[in-house]
Image (cartoon, rainbow over all chains, first blue to last red; front, side, top):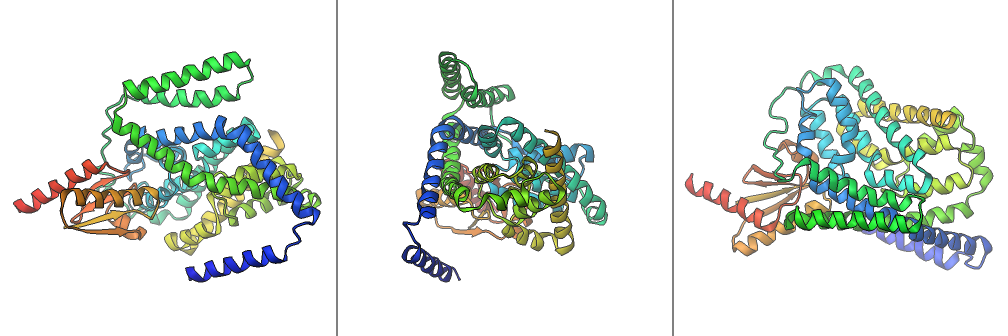
Amino acid sequence: MKEWSKFLFLIGAFLVFSLAPMDAPVVTQSLSAGLSLLQEYARRHVLTCLVPAFFIAGTIAVYVKKNAVIRLLGPTTKKYIAYPVASVSGGILAVCSCTILPLFASIYKRGAGIGPAVAFLFTGPAINVTAILLTGSVLGWDFAISRLAAAMVISVVAGLIMAFLFREHDERNSANGFATGLEDDLPYSGLTVTLFFILQLGVLIFFALSVSLVVKAILIIGSIAAILGIVFLRFRREHNLEWMRETWNLTKKILPYLFVGIFIAGIMEVAIPKEFITGLVGQNTFVANIVASLFGAFMYFATLTEVPIIQKLMALGMGRGPALTLFLTGNALSLPSMIVLFKLMGTKQASIYILSIVILSAFAGLLFGAFV
Amino acid sequence: MTIRVLGPGCMNCKTLERRTREALEQMNFQANVEKIEDLDRIVSYGIMRTPGLVIDEKVVWQGGVPSVEKIKEFISAQRGEAGAA
């Protein structure tokens, strides 16, 4: 099967290159639009946003004590603690997207139950730190914060809906050894790690600050010096190496796809007729938000690529409401992930989960478009 | 001895598998290294965070990539236990 798809891919590439009218204005314009968007990102977002963001994500992966958080998602935890924890923990526990499903399965089968598990499942991909930071850098911080807040609220509401409809599921869970034997052995105080984290966030924020160049340089160099101070004086060599490795792994995993996504987004701006987008999702209506929601649910966006694509859809006339909706369902759901969910949860639960995410996201976008 | 690396196939899981083989090589010790990618089986070991390392059905590590040195310690500890039993 895999060899077949490679073969078909090659045939497709061959047909495109041999038949496409490469000199036609629409082709040359699209390609150059793709390249100029790549340049925009390279100049304005790579050094000032993406690089610090990858280091921050690496920090979360290595230095945040995650097991204490996981224990809060166990079957004996009070619901009013488990839900909020699940709704934010996606951002700190799921630095690597492939950790989401095992953890979801554990919380679902043996932990706090279906509600918190669903909340975690939704926010895991939706409130990824790097994605929020890039959204802020490209589209503005009102967008980034709304994306974050809406994702958290939706995750809890969707969790509560699932927990209410499938009450009988949770009664089978008991406290048999959930998350036992998980130990954090980081010898650093919470204060040091928090400071380390804030300093890195500081670098990213200082880059975006509109102050004079001298002040900016002093702030940034000061923060970097402090970061290096912590690295060399406080942290152990093995942990620093691990931090570098995590950061580099994330970069390797995300950047190539992001560049392809940016290029495609640039092409889209020329290739898709403006009237098509404005007609479909130009106004902040319920229908427009549902269309955006469904599109995001089926479409697969590699991590971060949703940012340039939504940026260009907005340039083509997509309304702010539908844009936020697309952010919400874009990462959290995709056709491949839906297939896995059906296998894992069964048809009934999976379809209700997907349906509630699609509808709740559309409402969040509607509210955002109307009020923010 | 059977060593299982648990993880659905992301970068960290592959690193752990590589380091495990490296540790065995450095110790000059033969063992079965098996990679488990099936989610149900991973969860059945009680693993919360991948990747996980299981030696002779006992979970010795999860939620990150331990150093080669650390993996060597796990292996010798398990060997000691097996010898004593």
